[in-house]
Image (cartoon, rainbow, N blue to C red):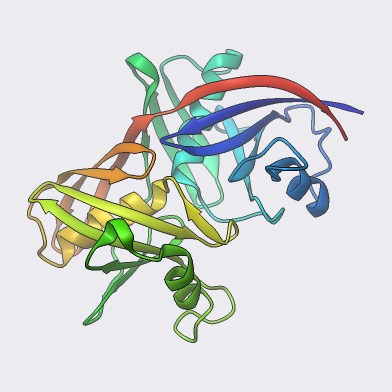
Length: 260
């Protein structure tokens, strides 16, 4: 069977996109999804995303990590899926869609800039050396020295698989403060089991964590990721973070077919 796919990337976070509105894709075939995401034996991507019909919103997002397993919310993937839906003509400039963590609003701007509303956050665990919060996916946030030369893969894996988060694990973000409204970060993603060039829920987690812990008083924060730049904005009321938006580029790379 020939599978038609589209490839998108958001600040270097790349995804295989499939229009599954006819429900043809074998969603339980973990090995197939893993192979499609494989950078040597398949298309190559950090994850695979299905665009499906939904009775109450414009579409449904179904996200798989590159290990073939269905996963929690992916911010950059969500932004790329909005761009994909726009390319297919499913939506125009504004949309609402459903994902594993609930309802999302998004808009399509000029120059492939997609702004995606993330979930509200009101539970933040502040520890001496790190912060933990869920922005649609669980995230460990930790400030480190010499971020540029930090061993993200080994240190991230140690935290992800360590006793702190148990069997489910957590994504792990290492952060450096640039100035009062700008932070640089590098992320180890569970499911990919490696550092990725960007992580949308991770950038969102870092922005909120840096505000919650007093590293910044800004409510619009610039995030330097390995694959480019993202902006996270929010409203803050006490310990509640609402109207959280992740904004950045989401670009079409190529379209093709592959035998499955």
